[in-house]
Length: 198
Ligand code: GTP
Ligand code: MG
Image 1: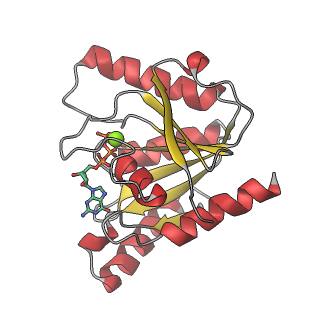
Image 2 (image 1 turned 30 degrees about the vertical axis):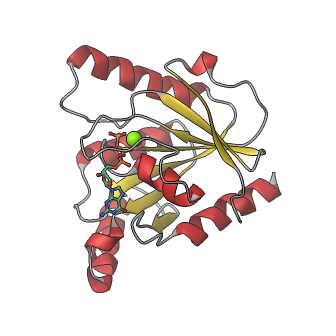
């Protein structure tokens, strides 16, 4: 799928105020700094459609982007960010949880994990929570440009082994790099094929 048009629509903190459309929506979630906003820019071939930063905690709201005028990408704040105050962390977690529980337009989420790290409890717990709430998701490994090809395979295998201790099957996954555009075609054609099947 080609992205010909991508535009920011609105940011807010409340799932009830998110755009009232009936188009398919896909949301990116994961720890702060994992590369959610960068991935949105990479997929849309726009340098700064979504705001990125080297410092964790950049995205603090639910951000809607309309793509090709017929589907939406959603950039969310990261979870597990230690440097925001406890009270704002609670608010983040609350509206992220409410977004996933209540957003009827959500077709599927992408849970991003940094390919360099071993499976982290916070990510595994989040995926568990998604499973328990029957919210469909794929895993997106980010920053693959930081590893050599063999190391990429090894890290994905390690991740699979850990997930298969609790999951019956490995969730659908993508290996990506926002620096090299690795994974772009695969991710976009996945979304494209879901969109045409709806
Ligand atoms: P929050 O909004 O804080 O939750 O972070 P985020 O997940 O949106 O991360 P963001 O896209 O802002 O990227 C965080 C940092 O990682 C930035 O310095 C990016 O340049 C860098 N980064 C993101 N993706 C990649 C990638 O694929 N490769 C490399 N090398 N760096 C990346
Ligand atoms: Mg962000």
